[in-house]
Amino acid sequence: MAEVTWMIHGITDMESIFPGKEFIGNFHTHGLNEYDNHRELCIVLAFPGQVAQRLLNDMGLRIAKKETVFTEGIRNDILANEMDVEFISFDNDPTLYVILPDENGKLPSDKDCLAPYKYQYEYAKLIHDNEDYV
Image (cartoon, rainbow, N blue to C red; front, top):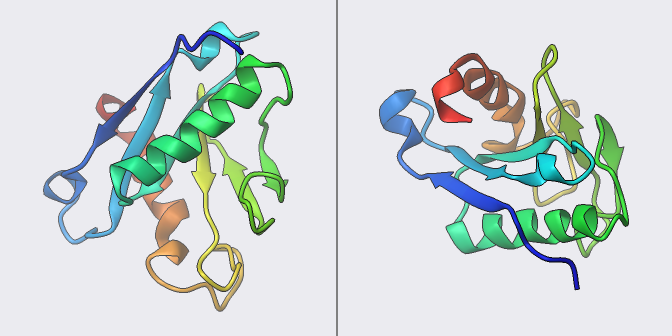
């Protein structure tokens, strides 16, 4: 078993920072960069903390065990139901933003993606542009 040396930081009151963005969340890692300089991960939707933590820890363990390296793009090996998950970043950002599918498997790039999932690109950009929150 890989030694866990990262932590997950969750900011649960993002709407007070970004008024009107009631579904914005910010669950991100610190310390994944210790594994071959891997980028940190951030979920941008307001999920229950245990759900976000489980998903980030599952991905973190895969990184720590050297099973995978996450990069920009779409992958279908993250969720148990094999729905696509997209990883995006901005500029030379040390963070990869985890873009999750809606209940129909649609990503924000699909025109029929449901709210709040369709706002994830916007939420990721807001968090990226405000460095105090990653």
